[in-house]
Length: 450
Image 1 (tube, rainbow, N blue to C red):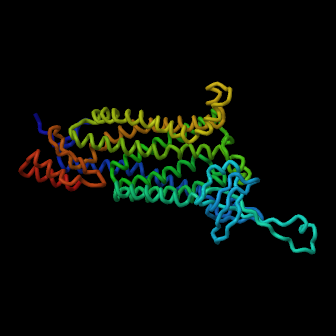
Image 2 (image 1 turned 180 degrees about the vertical axis):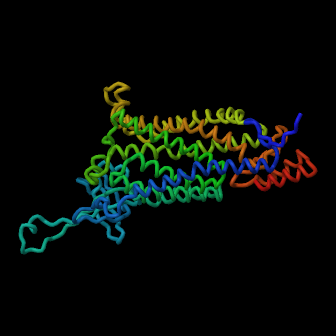
Image 3 (image 1 turned 60 degrees about the horizontal axis):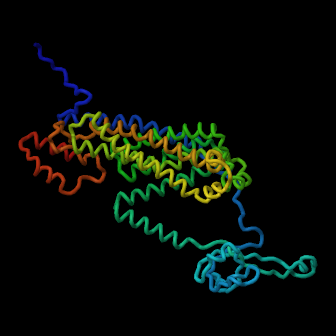
């Protein structure tokens, strides 16, 4: 039989065993991801340039004070619940002056001595002075309770949260906080001004989401094939979510007028399309959960491959989807009850009506929450199998230190982990799987290079 000099091509379910071949397939995996994610990023940046809000077209800033009204802070020094009228409290203002404070009846039970509150000082002139132009008006200042001062406890909670994230997750936690800040900056600088100027909702939502995901994922999890796989799955989920949200909002006749501030927003910024705000909110609402499931699913497949490096991609998909089904089951009801908790006062109010369950669910406010929940859940469910399949295909081509022997414990358990190997892992592996000779040295060098 004639001898063939053609290179051996591994079958689809076989992983290459030669370190040089492994490095070639790893490079191909990175090139494939770059060929997909690079143009997506470029298209996103072009979209951001096209949708970028004009500097001079922003609606005027609303004056929330009114003539003769100033805001200050104070501390409650006395509570008089039995007082007539509205003089139920006294407060020491920031300048040290103690004044009587008018407190609305619904807030009286909540106000106690020592509370920090926001106070509106309203200066009014006597009616008689206003009718006599020869007399300088005598101004009378009335102090009204506006709200509680919640800044200190909220800052404390934020500090505790950030401290715990950094303490537990260390540098990765710090990177996640930086990514979260970058995402909020994108929303403040681009998304809100674009919506205020009437830009189309779906492109604005997609540009915002893609930019945030690139920043958050790579900052929090590092630049790797694993992270890029999760990003690709997230992008598929985002596109599906945006498409379904666009169809559902039109089919269900969701106008965005049911919200508490809809009419105020229309009067303050006539260019705003309330349905656009609703659509953009649907896409952004599921962003965090979608990111969570895709990065977790990609990591699960990577760890499955590390445990059994000889697994075929079909086996990895099967095992990964078993994990994914559990993730779907837990995440879906998490989303549902998160929305129920956020809209609980509205749910209580609607439950008091004499309408049936279907009538309640199809009412404006409730329907928006139901559609938002279903749209986010559908995008999440679609992203999990896509991410699992991508991860199963790419992990076997990106793990440059993997050998193809099922019984060999030296898979690339950490080759694509931004945090690096767990201390002592490789020494422990060598103790359980002793090797010698040039082949072992080559495998070790390949493992270190990964």
